[in-house]
Amino acid sequence: MDMEITIQRTTAPKEKPQIEGIPFGTYFSDHMFLMNYETGKGWYDPRIVPYGPLSLDPSTMVLHYAQEIFEGLKAYRTADGKIQLFRPTENIARMNRSAEKMCIPPVPEDIYLKALKTLVEVDKDWVPSEPDTSLYIRPFIIATDKHVGVHASHTYLFMIITCPVGSYYPEGLNPVKIAIESREVRAVRGGTGFAKCGGNYAASLHASELAESKGFSQVLWLDGVEQKYIEEVGAMNVMFKIDGKIVTPSLAKGTVLPGITRKSAIQVLSDWGYEIQERDLSVDELIAACESGKLEEAWGVGTAAVVSPIGEIIYQDKEHVINGFQIGALTQKLYDTITGIQWGKTADPYGWVVPVC
Ligand SMILES: *Cc1c(COP(=O)(O)O)cnc(C)c1O
Image 1 (tube, protein in one colour):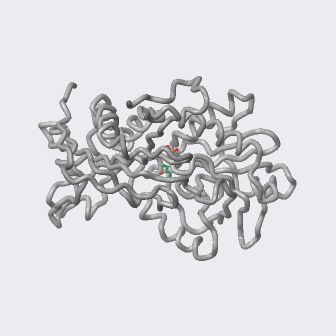
Image 2 (cartoon, rainbow, N blue to C red):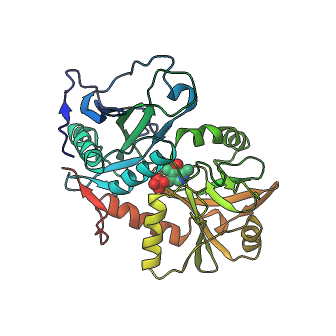
């Protein structure tokens, strides 16, 4: 499908915020992308317009039944001033898998990629150049039928907004404390765990708030059937180095979000010769590995933080320190390698980066 994206440029460009110390996801750039869908007509009217509020009827379906999906990726500025995306076609494919689960029509891949590139190019001055900064890109789709009553919508709005972000952890790559959650769950077999949908996040807030109030930065989620196997950490996938091998929860049950950082880390680690085990890992096995000293390193992986070292886990009120609450050597090397490719500091042997301009 070849659809032209119309571009209406702002006549009142905003002042760019100071990137140092900028809170994540707060300042948005000058433009946004929109495209509508209607049953029988398909996706139509792809357009870039000045960033601004939407006007929605109070009965708009997404507001009541949460038929919504989203994505998250970044545009990076290289040392020579060019701008590139990291594996955007993976985000596009994943969004369409989320769409299928949520009864949302898929977005044609070519128009999606063109929308990402065109929007970033229109707002290229918003891609910061300071170290560890990037332009965060948030595509999302909402159900827009004006109707109260439960069924899949017939109309949708696909949008992309972007915002300049600094380093996810302003104090640098520091280990975090996480709490194993043994009461509430994030996802169940047959549910929406593999889909990137707002509803998953809404349902996770209660446990996360509780953990935060106790001084932990993230929740380590267990499976929803036996509440025994590790699934994810906060909104990141999780990896462990146990006795020299890399263990990460498998995607087979559909309860773990298939992260693109996870997939990239697995590729890099296996190329370094590590044995990767994508399998069930029970909390008992993890705690035993920790107590016997076999748990060497633990970290979360996701677009926002890229790699986030885990320094301590608490389970049933008992604290377990990992690697002396220090960033592990492998965690650091993985962070340096993936971010090196993203910012064009190191060669990209995988063809992961896609130039924008
Ligand atoms: C987005 C997300 C991740 C990480 O995926 P990336 O593609 O690496 O950013 C992990 N877990 C959950 C629940 C997510 O929503």
